Amino acid sequence: MQLGLVASCAQPEPVQLGFIGELSGRGADMGLEARNGAVLAVEEQNQTGGVDGRSLNLLIEDDGRHPETARQAFNRLRSKGVVAILGPTSSAIARVLVPQANETALLLMGITVAPNELTEADDYFFSALSSTKIYARRNAQYVLQHLNARRLSIAYDRGEQAFTRSWTEDFSRHIADQGGEVLTTVPFDSSNATGFSNVARQLLTPRPDGVVLVAKSVDTALLAKSLRTLNPDIPISTTEWGGTERLIKLGGRYVEGMLVAQLLQRDSSAPYFLAFQEAYRERFGDLPGFAATTGYNATRVLIEGLKARRSGEHLKDTLLRIGTFRGLQAPLAFDRFGNATTKSYPTLVRQGRFVPLE
Image (cartoon, rainbow, N blue to C red):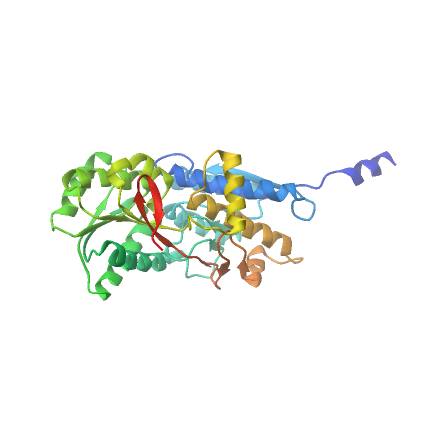
């Protein structure tokens, strides 16, 4: 009788979810925000009873943007029985982990990555964002419309070529289609910050009427400083990748007037988003950026998938069957390859804030 009583009162094993992201190093701001968004989504779900009476346990790994570290993190999470992995937050690491996900049939939900080569395949990689080429084309439209710049120079971080090179190529094609011209393209090594002055000179040599920076926030801020030290009036644009809160904190006056594409509608009055924003501020002491919002959305997608999964059904098939999920600002509709359709929004940096233009 006593053994039966103990068995009947035992708590069911928690559902294990994994997270892999860049939590240390030069790109840690985005990884930490994405982690925070995931943590908040899990904590909120546990407050409402978890999934089928089982609590969720988020196991967090730092890949440090090192391939071997990421591989080891993936294997550790798999050995602990995770049902899916959130992340990574770097395109370079996504290229490393997707083969492992496919070999093991373990779903990988990319948070802030959507390189073209990974978003057009039937595999075990999903993305909470649209593909790179979609954002590149939108950015080209923003530059032409809001900066009125048609003769451009571009710098991109060669360390993230899975994203930056394809983004640059798609952006350049759209600029050319609209009658503009990319005068020069300058790849750079983000680990060599002392070379930014030289990169800035190369960008300005052909006398462009605008410069586009395809880099993480810290490098975008440093490049903007080098550019505006040489030419204080040069218009500058950067991608969604560079548009974190850290850009303004590090860039100061050098990023004033910069055109920044955002994956977050910062002036949204959607009740669901406002409630999330307040919960995030109470939990982490700061307002959420796009990485936090995307991390939260991606985690909610997995949670809803787990709640709706049928007996014997792979989580991948569940997500594809459902197709469209509630997002903080707009629905997330996944295509047959597991890529979400999401919007971007142009902003300008004005007086230390991202100010929406549309």
